[in-house]
Length: 505
Ligand code: GAP
Image 1 (cartoon, helix red, strand yellow):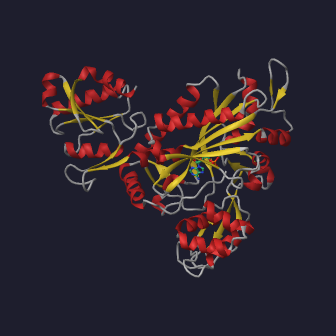
Image 2: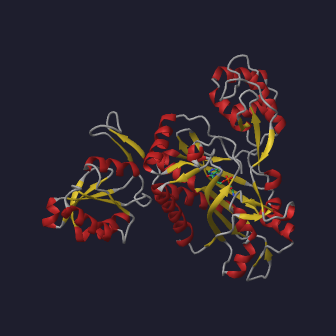
């Protein structure tokens, strides 16, 4: 459940430019900003809302609508404390936290150590390795660059070794001192107190993942739908985690949109490795073909034994190359029948499906693809961000373009009258806007000059701009300008709907 870290930007310039564009053009804004902001929260602006909605719709279409072996679910966000006790989250959904005594900065100890390991040069690495050759935790941390799954004692030991290195010792990234509190566990679940009942009776949690809503409704879905193994239940919805590490913009937030699937099967009948491999190719295809992301920016990474949850037989992450390094985008885990068994034991309800042929009761196993949809949004922005020209982004011939896949672009078409003060042009452009908006998400712009309008649409990834000019009044044609090539072509107004429908197919 805990994932890899993200604090040190490798190409920090790109992230800064993206965050600035996101604010300037309305993708997302820091949460509660007028009151000074609330750490690790973001609000989505008009174009960000469209982009997120398009990603969600595409996900739902691809994983539910287009498949006969999938059904959907929309479980509640506030859920019974017993769900999270049975699932193991109350006891185990915790990060190791540490504070700097000098500046009071609070951070995840694993992130602190992993970021530090990344900065070590070969010489220092070899030195530490030699001195601590007998210590398997130090060796493992240095070799893998990861400390996930390490016990608190092991983390303390690694921290001590790194903090006391004579040169390049580990320091607080905030103030540069090396004066730490003890490392302690910090549970990520958000408790909520319901009504006026104090104590356990009124105690609930904001869900830390949508997956548990699927497990606790398994019986309901089976009883109310004609499903047969193997089949999956999919859900889109918010997850909440009390994250303490600064999250690289929307990469890691305390409230985020998830898209989770629990794919149930009988391991006696269906080979789990085959299902696992099928899901790997489906996820890959979604990211590359549906979202249009470059294959070279993706990789699979298998979890080490320490990292993997004890009930999982195999977990692999699909990682994306963010400007701050390769990081987890989408997790794929074979969770066996752990969750259904745990909920069955705790609730004393039979969470089974009956084999129609033999009448045998089966507690199915699951393979779980789980993704952060807001993380997908950050990925598509990073992947689409392009600067063209010598000192791109400003001045003539230089531009910043979001080369988003047209299917997910916030607006498909922008419609302009060539001049804002010519009523005939504005009227005709408005007619086109009114017609196209019945079919696509479109926008209208009559401000500034045409160059500025193109620039604004390029920055939000609008694939096509339609301009109504003086010739349009005679020939009933318009100029369509392509975002990526900037090529222009003349098309009749009555053919526009067909033209864009073909392009978007
Ligand atoms: N049910 C399995 C599960 O929740 P996870 O790896 O903890 O697995 C799934 O989370 C996905 O959710 C991750 O791969 C990541 O894309 C996203 N995610 C996790 N924590 C996040 C956070 N704090 N902010 C944004 N996205 C997050």
